[in-house]
Image (cartoon, rainbow, N blue to C red):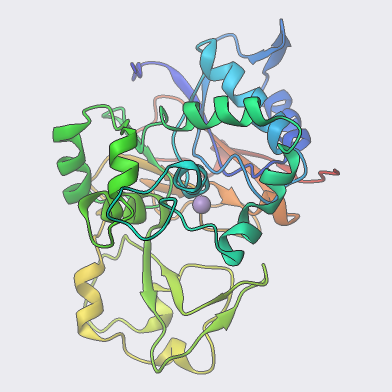
Length: 323
Ligand SMILES: [Mn+2]
């Protein structure tokens, strides 16, 4: 994969099967559909992962993005949902008690329901897309800017690079991720799911999507690690239960915080279900997931040669997908 730092890129957040919204966003960005492939005269698109699950047109979304990547008009990195699909379809190693890397449990089934249903009549198509998912890199480092689905972790990415220079892993690595705490498990989890910390006192919370969780999503880019409260680090649409936001964060949690300081290259992530008007997190950090599949916005950042991100470079459309 060869990212040309001199080009312009349109980075695009989590689509989750909102194909109609994706086409409207591409149109808004000046892309035209030629010979069945959306393309732009001088820009390339860069998708931040999570193309699948939840939405009404998952198969259509995959065809749109795959055709763009195939024809050299786009890049795409892996989201946690593409990883889940791979893990769902990858047989576990012989030592494992599970049949697949991702157990076919009710909970997992529910998360994949729309994808499995929409591909029910298209099993070969689904097989092909799963082969393609395995070729998606876990990160892109274009020097001037970087992209990862949820969290840039220097230590893990540098380790990953020694084995997979361009961030594309292989089936054996997906298989290894079934072993809790293995390097593969850590890499997929941290890069594609971010830093999730346990709720204290055995608490759990039910999110807007109906799933009950015993952990919460946090920021990975703290400047100041002193005297952090739960409220300082939380980064998810749901408020923390009770008065937890005011409670000090246990010091052992800080070892999970990776940091991403203001001097590091421009970084784009998706994943976090942001809401409201798209805005920068920092001059070198933007999250482009604005909950399109939940009636929010599908958001792009139009990157030219700027050294610091510009609030006026966000481009978005309101999501209005129908099945
Ligand atoms: Mn995600």
